[in-house]
Length: 488
Image (tube, rainbow, N blue to C red):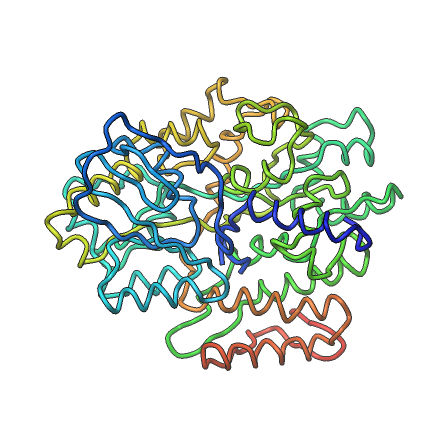
């Protein structure tokens, strides 16, 4: 979208972006898997024939309505719901307390409520999961919920919520990262007969940079990707070690590789723009996904459902579920590196599970939404989410009924099932979110040539000292000067 576009249209685009996508993270730097603004999809009110009398309240904290919509649409014990409340069979009801994930807003308000024992359940993300896994306020679900069997879930989703013998959370989804390519751009650059197999090869690790050069050399005014943040998680999900070791905060070499590669790509004009509006969740970043200017979109299952289908839709199909849409000109390919984008875990507090009036409903909700195969299959087929049942996802990967016209007849589950093997949360540590958000903000100025690499690093250090009172260190083998970033 040009900067000269009318103010009215720009405002409408911004509003649409927020409605279409409740930024999944903080899911997870980006804001992270999900997160900044609240999503407003699926707000239709269901009304039972007999609205039963309200009994006990379950206070559930979240940053958007992603899990709320999953409960409303797929949980067997829902009676009816309105914007902020889900009424369960039997009379108990869930009150959704939503605080957008801008900066630390969600965590700050959640922490205050936890301190007052005013929370029964809540959700959290990978970037700050360890904080709540270590919290004395959070229950050990393995012992508190009888019959909770997480054996069929993907390993990485369990690793991050495991503390010794305790399980402090569980998730209904896995979030393997993939590369979605624009088939219209591919044809413009490589010819109308370019095949899917050829594009998969061009987007692999060995050929990715050369493909970016080909896109530019074609002189079709096309780009490899939209903005600098698009591929950040491809790097941040492949850390060499935990950045926080309990004493020192050492920024991983992979994050400097992202900064170095992004600077190189933008200077070569392989990236559409590094202006703020083209950063993750920016108005232009969202608008570009509906256009045919850039070859690659780095994506994952939740992003397709909550964001991409809002940004890119054929006329008259804007409100249709993905299964009912026609070809949008995009194709899903494996990523050139294993990565994941966010993920949401839910948990219960010790206080919540100590309340006789609601503990049974909390336990049933957690078991059904995160371990019941039928429910997880229904979510996967209905919303396109890659749910946290390895057996179910492997079945769907071979199910021809899961092919969707939106992606040219692809069965995306087959690609997700392969890509999820690259997801690894073993290197997660306490300050990942703050590092991710602030390093992207500081180094964007370096990409824009408003600062040197050394000045960007100094700004990043200052931001962390101010926000978390920690002084980040450079890793061995990385040096930063006014001339740029050197990685041994």
